[in-house]
Length: 215
Image (cartoon, rainbow, N blue to C red; front, side, top):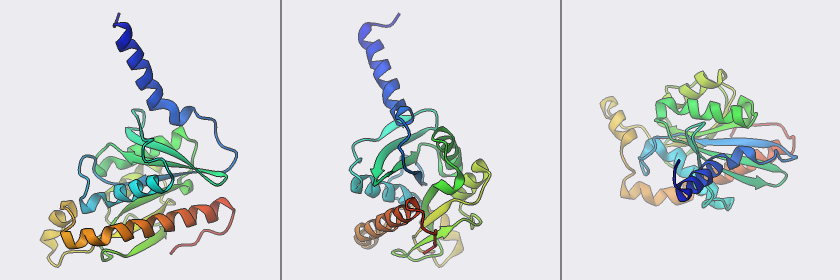
């Protein structure tokens, strides 16, 4: 039998990992926002979706509330948004398997694919450009492809964050997995703010039952 101190620590960790799901469902709508990326590689272009989630958490006042949940292999944080509730998710799996974390979290919270937002990088848009796409194909993005496969749906709204495409096709992998240059880093703070505004405005509109439009 483990010492009392270790036992108490284990119980605390178990509760910390489960608090998100054990909270009662709020009376309003609930949405999940997943930032796609590679864990352990902050600052890379491919993980810009995770950077957006960080800014969203700060805006919603839950930047210090992330809790690891082993059931979906992700970090989770819950935040109120008016009468709605937003579940923020950072997968702890690699990009190509992000969908397993997203689908498991959607199952735990009782959400449909239409109630799950994906935030990810977009090669075909220059840095600083944003677009909210409503469903459709993965367009070559492995993280989105994984989500479509695991959720068995392509209906998820997606915030696409432009990272630009290098001129030479052979440079794409290094570009995607590389860190933002110093010049690009100067563009990031206002970009993350605008991405957060776009997400919150869209979720508020849908929570009030207004038609969902792409931007």
